Image (tube, rainbow, N blue to C red; front, side, top):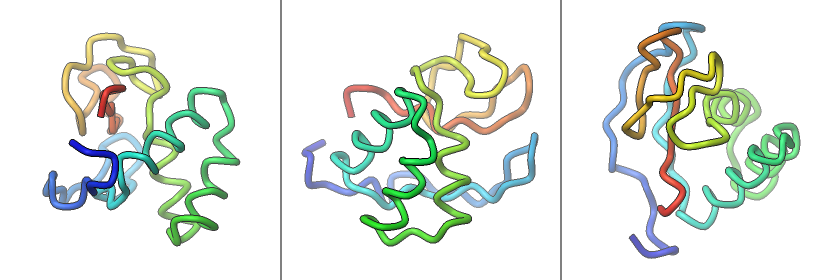
Length: 107
């Protein structure tokens, strides 16, 4: 996938996180935008990631916060319980039932 391509339409999600009830949102961001957000999340700068999504990408506060809350720092490791065998993107953790975007680092 090229940096200017969007992930919109790659996943058809019409569900909620079974742990918290948050309505899962299909990421309609370019690969470059996702890399920026993932970098902030991996640096424990989630508040900055939410603000970036709101200010630069035009995503409302509630959606930005929900997306960032469900992005895991490291591929394969649940953002909530640290279960370390998540193998796919857009996956529910089998241990805690929390949704994880689990985006591959090489997108």
